[in-house]
Length: 228
Image 1 (cartoon, rainbow, N blue to C red):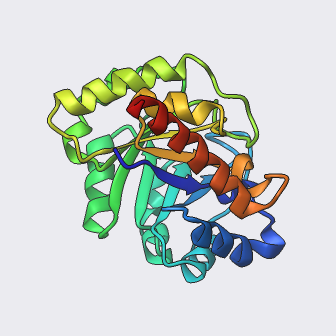
Image 2: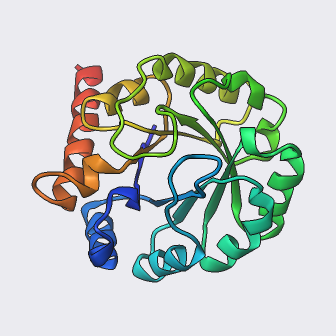
């Protein structure tokens, strides 16, 4: 399985945003992840469509937008227009989830659905046939730099069984929160196909490119062990 890396700009230096996004792309990132927070669904307030549009201009990679907001339906068109390639909403924020997912696809964007750590992954069984991505939050959303919740690994295994058992092997299984060179390997072993990493990339002591390389090397080492 080819694992995608999606560095999250939540941890980027916004004075050098375009430069750092470019560094991540050149180092081998697959997607650029944009965390949108509203101060209601989660405690923090981050960015909106204008920054998403700036990221779109700065990279040729898919722009992966994660909406951690209340009433996401009100803002889908704005983020689609800003250049989102993937739009992920939270199951907990969408009372009519099928309608929301259908609208994202109507806008020409790939739909994803996320669940918080306390929400069972099995709650996404009914929506699975309609999405392109499931996102397992491995921290409680709202802040960068949190530690990985270890029980998320078993949740990823259950999510992988849900995807494969539903005949939806093309659905990305993404994990977000506390991903670094240590936790990435376990997440991938459990079935994750896309890793979101903020601090491990954009706050790496040796720079953005070194952060991407460290994750790739951790995963390559795991592959070498499996081959041996």
